[in-house]
Length: 74
Image (cartoon, rainbow, N blue to C red; front, side):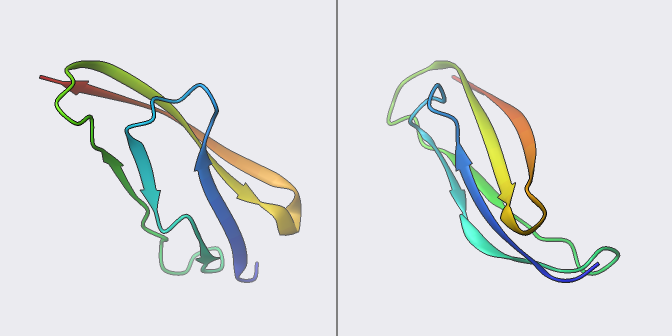
């Protein structure tokens, strides 16, 4: 129920074109302002379906939030 530090990053099998910002920060308490993370896919001219696993680590309560991200690039 308090503010909580977080660390966000991608799994080792994620496509290297993905990035997240801010990768480190502090989330507001439950019921407070949502924390916005910006995920970018910069494929540098490549086309296809790129996948990534985003993991948000919350070390204070020893938990993780995981998302699967798919970007279809033409």
